[in-house]
Length: 225
Image 1 (cartoon, rainbow, N blue to C red):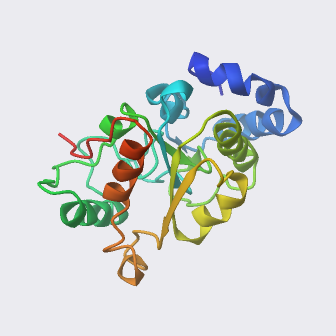
Image 2: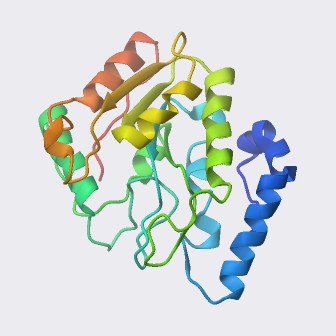
């Protein structure tokens, strides 16, 4: 695993890459590859969330759990899939909520959320890799320690960030965030198993923009083209 982190992130996270957990994680990923397993996303996309959203541009964080584990789905942005791939169920529900939350939103014919990332929405998964066809297979191998540090670093070094936490897993990360200077929007997860329990109608996107405007920041254009 080559560490090709965007410079502003490397500036605040460089120490992590020398730590024991990260060296063990690198070794684990090499073993998986050497054993012939396919790992998603492909190497250059593992840190895609950081490449697309530099540290100094972060305004919003949307936290996912695991990359998609199907062929050509994951590309390093939480909830997002590459163009040409069917939109997954959770993202379909996110789009449905956008239609009712953001006036004029039109559901796109793809699931690539890069346009959000380029506007300052950090689409961060707690684990940054997964073995093909095996959800959760790279959990508890070190990625969570790294991404928890990412959340804490944003909390410590920035202010007025909106953290969108969907579901119990993401909401458990609230303890890493200084809520005296940041904003947290919580709801059930957009998965088909839980979206009807309060995700639909929670209006996270308009709430986020209202906060950003109040903070003197440019709101996000949620429309995907």
